[in-house]
Length: 525
Ligand code: ADP
Image (tube, rainbow, N blue to C red):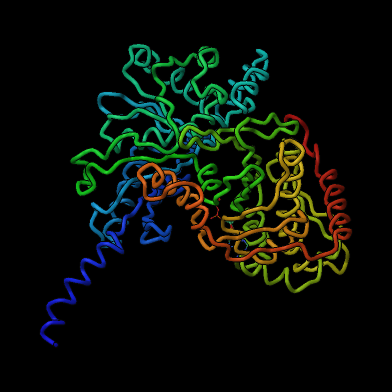
C-alpha cells in the first residue's frame, strides 16, 4: 500500500494541480509619479506580490518652473521594474502584461532615431506657459477649448508646454518640421522606450489632458494644433486604455528577461485610480486625499459640460466603450496637515493630528481655510489666501487640529456639491484612497458632511491596480468588469452619524469663513 501511494499520489496530485490551479499569472504595473517611479507586481487575485520604487530629481530652473530629466524617468522605471520582478521570485514568463499609469500632462519631445530628449520634461506643475495661455484667452480660444477638449485654457495642460519647447530650444522647430521628433506625455515616453521605439502611442485618458485632443471624436484636433503651432505628425497615435500597444523589446538593459511581454494597458494616474476603485457605474466617484485632493466621477458615455469650472476627460475606453469622468481638485488638503507639522510645529506627525482632533468633541468654532495658493473649484479665486477664524481665548491646538481635518472634508464636500449639480446622475457613495484616507476621524467627518457612505478599500494601491486591471483585461487575466469589481474589498465603510442639521450649520459657517479669505491679496501682488 505504501509503495503504491509513494508512486501514484504525486502524479495524481500534479495532474490535479495542473487542472485545478493553472500556473499563476502576474501583471506588472508601472506607476510613474511626480516624485517617484514605482513598479508593483499583482497576482490574478489583485494582490500585491512585490514592489520597488526610486525617486528622481526635481529640477527648478526658475521660480514657478518645474522639470524632470526624461532619461531619469526611464532609468528609475527600469530599475523599479527589474527589482520588483527579482523580489517576486517568479518566472518572468508568468508575467502576462505590463500596465502603465503616470503623472499626467507632463510633456516630452525626443528624437525619433536616437531616442534622446531635446529638452527636459516640462512638468504639470510648471507655470512657465501662463503668458501663452493669456494670449490664447485674449484670442478668444477659451470656448473652443472647452467645447472640444473638456478643459479650460491653463498652463497645467501639455499643449502649451510642447509649444514652449519648440519656440525656445534652438533648432527644435526645424527638426520637428522635418519629422525627426516625437512628442508625448509620460505614458508615450515609457511605451516608446519599452517597445524599443516601435510604438509611438498614447491612451485616450492621457491625450485628454493635452488641450489638443477632441474628447468627442477621440482624435487630435487640427485647429487646436494649428493654434499652438504643433505639427500633427509629432503626436502619438491615440489608443484605447486596454489593448496591446507593443511588446517589451529584446536587449533592454536590466529588462532582458522580460522581452516579448505585451505592454497592454495605460491610463493617467487619476483615471487609473477611478478604474482601480472599480467605479464602473455612472454616479460612482473616488476621492484621493493626498497633498491635494482629486475627485473624479464616472458620468457615463457622454461628456458633461460643467457650470462650475470642473473639467471633463475620457476616463477610459475599454472594449470599444468610452466612459467620461468629471474632475475637480482641491489644491491644499493633506498639505495643511504638513503645514501644521512643519511650519507651525503644533504636531510631530500626521497621526498626531488625528489623536488631537479626537480629543475634542468639535473645533470649538474654529475654522481654517487653507487657501495657501488661492482657491480652486467652485471658487476659482487665485487671490484668496489662508485664514483661521473663530478663535477665542479658549481655543487650543486640538481645536485647530480638528479644524484642519474638517477643512479637508469641507473642500471635498464643496466639490461634490457642484459635481452633483453638473452630472446627469447623483453621487451614490464616495470611494477613497491616498495618504490621508487612513484617518478614521477625517473619513467620518466626510461621511457626515456628504450624507453618503464613504468607502475605504483594503487595496490602498488603487492607482497602480487600475493600470494592472486595464492591462490584465487586454490579455485575459481578468474577463470583464464584474470580475474586477469582485476583487475590490471594502476595509471600512463610514456612514453618516451626526445629525444633518448640525452638519449644515457647520457647512454654512465654513462658507462664511471662505468669504473672509477671498480676494485677500491685490490682483498683481
Ligand atoms: P501625494 O501622493 O500627494 O504626495 P499621499 O497620498 O502620499 O500624497 O498622501 C500624503 C498626505 O497624507 C500628506 O499630506 C499627509 O499629511 C497625509 N497623511 C499621512 N498620514 C496621515 C494620517 N495618519 N492622518 C491624516 N493624514 C495623513
